[in-house]
Length: 245
Ligand code: 48H
Ligand code: FE2
Image 1 (cartoon, rainbow, N blue to C red):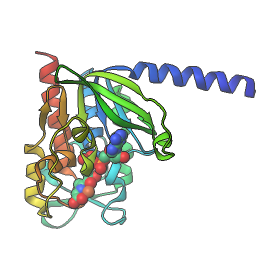
Image 2 (cartoon, rainbow, N blue to C red):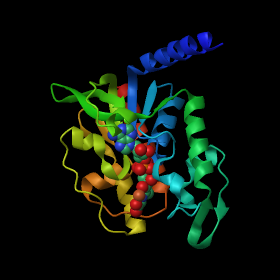
Image 3 (cartoon, rainbow, N blue to C red):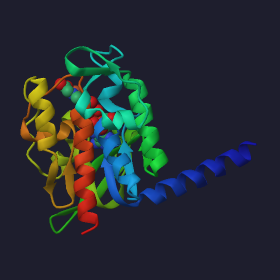
């Protein structure tokens, strides 16, 4: 049977990655912002590829607050979690509590069901840029990067790229955007600002989630995640507008 397993994996894996080589939108990072962005785009029949360097989805949300398996969300920002079937438990001050592993899995599943592709174990190490416009990303295996081997990368093209890499704002840095780094904690204000700062930072490149806060030096908010979801949704809506212009 080994004789069959190998060609099946190579053929299927090749076809999958080949399909990812040209997308309408590439979302870098499978945290709450990236997953929501991809879900919203895929629901509108946009061809989306998520590139995630780890082997799991959910990004920083999966770790809850200081590894306690709980996340918090404001009622008015919980729409997406509700839509994908995450159990939300009413708590103090109009906040809802949820299980972050459940939220990560259900958001990722919703994105997949809507038609998004998720590549894991692949890291974005550069952007493709033509005449000042970001036209996709340059990728390599995370394991190759970790081993510090010089192996030349491959490129994945897209009309729009979304930096949803969290605190690092890794794609913005690669594209030459100044990244101030997130500011101190102020949960309420941080939740508002992350949405406000979600925008196109360079032709073809949007920033969403904690990366948007990091670019602008906005407040951090701790383990409250509604701003990330709203930010991912806003990026998707703006990209949709551009794609249908
Ligand atoms: C491929 C990459 C690369 C790369 C990183 O950190 P995330 O969860 O980001 P968001 O913005 O969806 O959510 C932020 C939230 O988790 C958080 O940290 C909050 C609310 N903090 C508040 C506070 O006070 O600290 O997900 C980013 C994902 C991760 O899975 C990374 O592995 C991935 O992006 N990633 N993937 N290529 N170069 N860099
Ligand atoms: Fe964080």
